[in-house]
Amino acid sequence: MHVRGTGGARTIPFGEFHVLPGTHPERETVLQPGDVITAIDLPAIAFARHSTYLKVRDRASFAFALASAAVALDVQAGTIRGARVALGGVGTKPWRSHEAERALIGRPADVATYRAAAAAALAGARPQTHNAFKVELAKRTLVRALTEVST
Image (cartoon, rainbow, N blue to C red; front, side, top):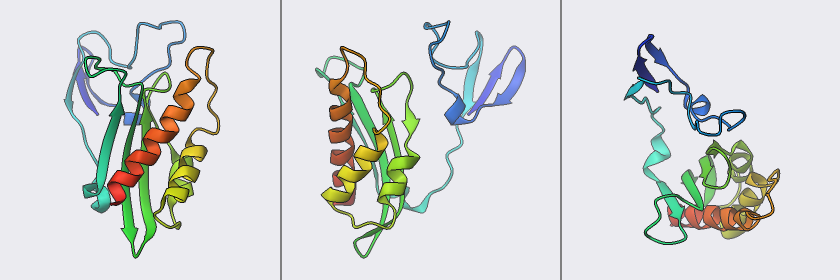
């Protein structure tokens, strides 16, 4: 991400853009007052044309996601050759799941593989008392997104 602010121009890797609350729960990003995002570079991935974003909300009137999944798959002869998986709405910040990607690559493009990838993505989840339902919701969201993109 290219940003321009009072200190000049800088580049922020997308994985470092969102921040955990820590001592400043009011901050969600590394942007400083006066910063403006001027451009976002997206690397060319040939199989990105087979991608989708799925956002699950409590009601259509709410803008925020209870769970979301962005996925892209490269499927050749029924086997997954490449994958990108990102999840949102279930943690403090969105994240790319390398665990889910590893669980997909080299495997058949089917629901059993998608469920295994969802389990891998959420294996380290540590839900709180009132949001434990989001773990299962995230898994189902990811399986649905993968199913949609592979059909």
